[in-house]
Image 1: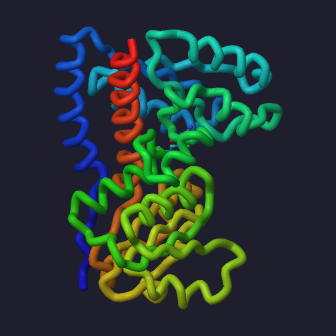
Image 2: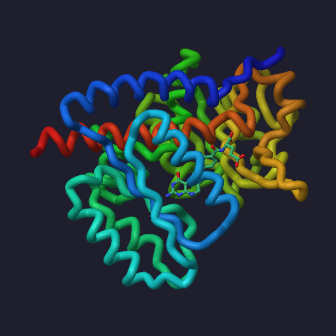
Length: 285
Ligand SMILES: Nc1nc(=O)c2c([nH]1)NC[C@@H]1CN(c3ccc(C(=O)N[C@@H](CCC(=O)O)C(=O)O)cc3)C=[N+]21
């Protein structure tokens, strides 16, 4: 079997075109979605993601403001700024790029962002709402993955979904979203025994470990759907996933590439959440 490749980049483009029209309509009602992105320090990878967000916002017509802060920014300074953005009525979404420098407590920062402006979907209130299947801001990468599966009408209900990785921003929430869609979900991580046995029984395999070529054709079931969430840099600076693309392509039924897979969808869902926040804030005025 040769897999159909799911290009997140193409789906992202069509969703961005739709959102562009939606924002044009919103502007006629004087609603201008606005996102603030805070980037601390000068990690090149973070800078590259942030510039992707800026580009997407600009294309769609979302007002985006980038706040660049030095790597020695104090926790208090950041929390004070968040407080100010929380109170600013013109701002609908706040994103603080992770990871943060060691002197800043990440969890404190996540909890300081108003749940109404938490377009990352990282606030415990929004995570709780997601777990209980209520309307909320879904975390962008899991939301993007679900949107990719649905775009190809891949059946989720009753299927065995295996999630490799249990990070708070990808692994854990993507498993919960798949559970909400009635999949049977298994989480695997560094302490899992018989890993291969489990991945081979997956109908849908989500790989979010952060190690290049973790999964090859021998680890999967014929005809599985394989979603590669890896963002690894080779020594030459090339972006690669967690999946051995060439071998898995010959055995899976669907496969996402890196780059041009999940990454562009993550950014697109951030834009969707920002528009949603703007509509919500306006209906409360
Ligand atoms: N508060 C917060 N929210 C995030 O959503 C968040 C974060 N912090 N910290 C870092 C991770 C990583 N992340 C990516 C977004 C887009 C691409 C992406 O678009 N990648 C392109 C290629 C980009 C390139 O070549 O560098 C692609 O896969 O085709 C990748 C990774 C968001 N994250």
